[in-house]
Length: 290
Image (cartoon, rainbow, N blue to C red; front, top):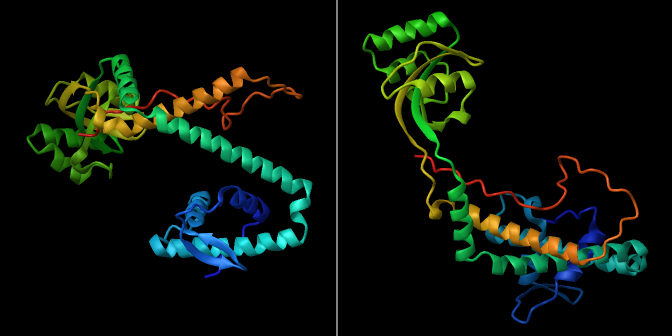
């Protein structure tokens, strides 16, 4: 299948020229008018195309798709050279941009290789663990119905000896909780009216009808405990990402501090979609689900 060329073909060609140098061990997969395309070229293009590749393509089929793209790229790039596109100021600007971008990625990749050590990851984990305040979480069930009258009727059934989970399955309007089971949660995970009523209960107790924006609830407290901080192995990947991102951000900020930067126009305040600086936040280390 012939791959349709991107509208930004010259920019793609510039990136290919920057990244597509053949390594000694590379396997030649195709030649276009004598110009070799290797498996290393396919790897680089696959990484560059990323999410734009059809998701259904895997393995050899994806490699073939990318190889076809590279063949088209070589042909169009050669035509662009004949047309004199490489001699234009716009082409030079694009080449300069992709050169700088590739060099920046090289620097940040090297930072990542040295930053993500076991010692650095464990230090971040331990620092976050020390900052965590004790927090109670509960395991509860509920029955959700539209009216107070229906809530009172459900309450009468469970107080009369019927199984709470059975009544919930029969009358509750919450499709996401089988037997009314909400699992373990902290106070902040629920709307205030529900949380206030649920966290006042003792193990085994059932609440009176509680009104929230979703309707009327009957709540049963199954258990209560202090929230456990997750073990290191359960959150290692999250911590490693944070360590790498922080090291990369610190590197960029050090380069900024050491440089003479002159802005010729006033700096506009950043919008919510554009952070002022790539400084990662503390890793979100949540307790694993029971």
